[in-house]
Image 1 (cartoon, one colour):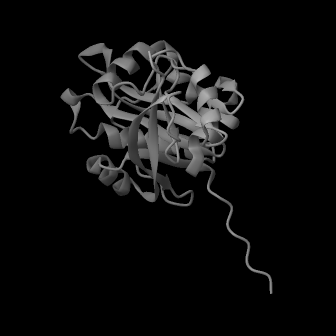
Image 2 (cartoon, one colour):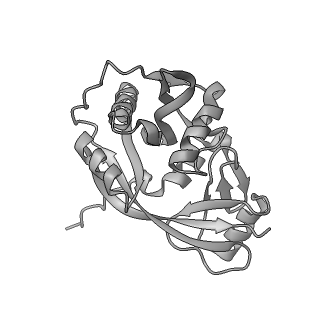
Length: 238
């Protein structure tokens, strides 16, 4: 009697590599065994194999002093790129059949475009410096809330980052410290979930494993934890 076939691996487990090879291939920089996003889009890369040769190829795509992250097993020790440690992250998913959280219709949530990129970078530099760049806006759709007393200031936002059809990552969820406690993060995350449901997409996200406040919020909204993964930080020497 034949053994049952093993389930197909979840493409989201290798989210960076699958996004760069599919939906975001047009954004990718390529060198043999390595692919990466341009530095002004996102600090992420993937390797075709976990080898010194792949790290040498990745180095050719990086500027001196540039840092990028790869997902998966720790890279081999080499002088080609400096290893700067790992960040454990949970991968979470919102089940496609789950009821969506309600949207707070009283909040002035509006679409964001790349014309808003300076305000988006300014906000994310307060919340999680270095991960959102001037052209990250090209990766997906974004939504935000502007300060009613200072319309030039973006005070909360959420959107999409890694996209590997039909899976779309919810990302960039942040609120300015002066405006927290108003339910903006939950409302914007719900807004993105509704947007992705209209696209018949599976909604997923990454969150640092130690960020219990965010993890609790995502669980309340209906996300379930899939697995823990590690982002490995690599730097090209100056």
